[in-house]
Image 1 (cartoon, rainbow, N blue to C red):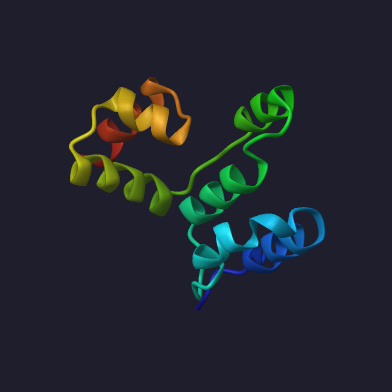
Image 2 (image 1 turned 60 degrees about the vertical axis):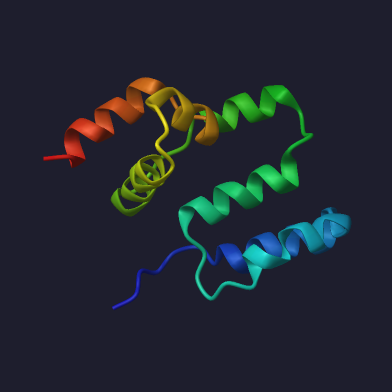
Length: 108
């Protein structure tokens, strides 16, 4: 059974075509995937809204949440690239404490 939720592929395609058509080529490789992961959504968001208002960006950052699959994907990314908690936190705009907590929870 598949998870039901927002169709991020359609949402981001519409946003790009209506508000930022010049960025379509930049995002097309991600949008061509059958299913978008949470990390794909984060990457699209960064690509599309990278030059938006800083205040809005900080507000949105405080309201992110991650599911277990995404956390495991981030921790796997860290392991594959040999990153420290700080490097992963900077890459994904997270708290170092969040990364450390996730490692404690999911390394058991």
